[in-house]
Image 1: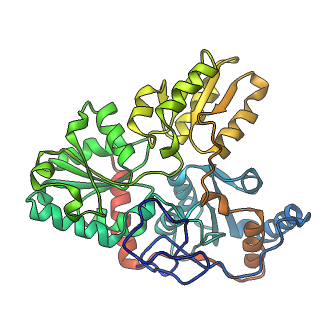
Image 2: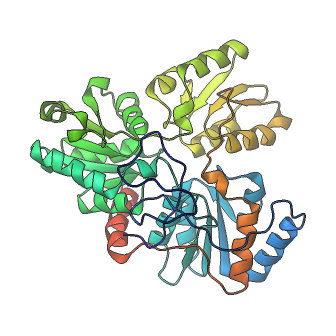
Image 3: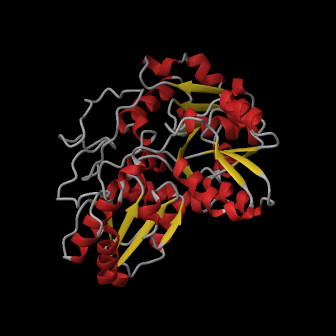
Amino acid sequence: MRDVTTAQPLDVQPTPLALLLLGREADPRSERGVECPGDLPAPSDPDLVARARAAKEKLGDKVFVLGHHYQRDEVIEFADVTGDSFKLARDAAARPDAEYIVFCGVHFMAESADILTGDDQQVVLPDLAAGCSMADMATAEQVAECWDVLTEAGIAEVTVPVSYMNSSADIKAFTGKHGGTICTSSNAKRALDWAFGQGEKVLFLPDQHLGRNTAVRDMGMSLEDCVVYNPHKPGGGLTAEQLRAAKMILWRGHCSVHGRFSLDSVNDVRERIPGVKVLVHPECKHEVVAAADHVGSTEYIIKALEAAPAGSKWAIGTELNLVRRLANRFADQDKEIVFLDKTVCFCSTMNRIDLPHLVWTLESLAAGKVVNRIQVDPETESFAKLALERMLALP
């Protein structure tokens, strides 16, 4: 339903669609993308910083650059604002005079910005291969098939879809069309409270961990209230009786970064660093969240470290670029901040946005050529916006 797509490394849960190699062909109904035309500057070019500054200065107020917290420092340096995905999309919507919105993030984020900005604004993603493995774990066809399964089980009418912000425009549109809402990692409980006021069950897409953690940790449900729908198994791998008994029907999706953290990671860091506080993102597995001292969104993590006393020790379970940036930021306050896992783990697709891609994008725009525009079709945009507006109206 979208006319621009993105690419992404193969996921451990392959979709039934043809798997694509980066730079070759495209699947218009997947976040996987594929082609980033144009001649990029060499990463070794010593003038990249100066070129980026010159192009941005030439564009002036015509361009507004958004930088997600997980971006490289070399990219964040040129961001007009930084934040999480929804904050950035709202920031873009608050700048109606900016002709170009350059979103240094991943594809679903740029889609959200296109949905929330004016028709006269153009959203650009510096590298079309910057997709999201989590968003790619739920396709429009799979979710439509799931709804058929719920209908056959006799529960579709009492089920409200709630989709995480980290989903494609197609999934947001499905959610809006079926009376549901979008949520972020910081307002997931409010979204679920609202949803259970509308129906008896929730279909939570596409991150099972955020759904489970919110239901059990924040709302007092039991693990038995949750079932996992696997789109690669007939009927989702569930019986009609299991679906009817469940309160939370969780999509079998996850974040490839946050899903790496384990209970062993928590136990190991506590042994290595006496007195350490473990702070993790709610996209982590339930056993990791249960063992942590604090749990919260990216913005929550930043604010918690800002408020932390000097001399405190923290192990952070989120993307490494952000953890490193926070460690450097608070080093002079004697705050020890380490990555929760011993294994280095960047978000590989987020890291595709690098300085050469940003320079190419800015110089192209300065020359009057719009590259890598992300544009959601009108019907999809209409229903996706409805779901987003329901989120904005949450009490």
